[in-house]
Image (cartoon, rainbow, N blue to C red; front, side):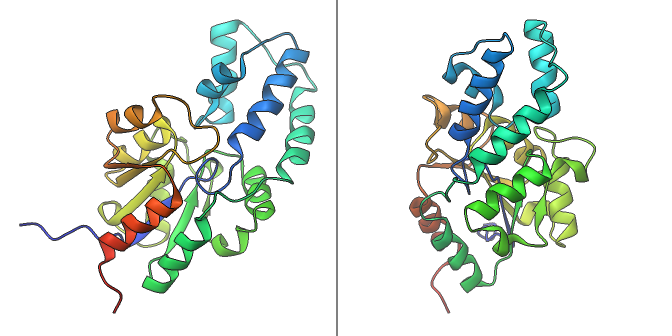
Length: 230
């Protein structure tokens, strides 16, 4: 019988896992795109955007809709997202999960497809940035973002852990695919306010070992893996 899996590093996605920011960003995007001639139902754009890189999102809008962003679009988007992200909050129960990992001496990191400045802004607004300093990973550090495994592999390598010893917590199909491709154990998370119908099944279909609907459930799952405290 193989030894039970006990993670040596836990890597969290940010949006929708650590910070309840997906719905906030979605409202900004949908409103600004409409002002520039491209209309989406909020749920439709959310399906397209969750877990994607900014580059991939723009490429998809061009390929699927023939839409090219206007010259000032990026600056307008930055201004509106910065204002909106100042009010984001941590997902309920996140600090309890991080406290448990600290108690067990297990390091943790964040690896997100978000641009570095936006990632740090959201973590800071939610009061989580100090807990992740030195362990914040973004697409600017690698050649390819999620769903490719590069970002997760870079995080593991930087922190001195083998991929097979890492646990990934992800709320998007693209992110879960990245973790699986990196040969890491993936737990799907559906506890964010943005979670779409069918997300749990979609996460399982790409290889998530478990799908959990709250940080309380994540904490319970980790406690189960680690066993009784010494």
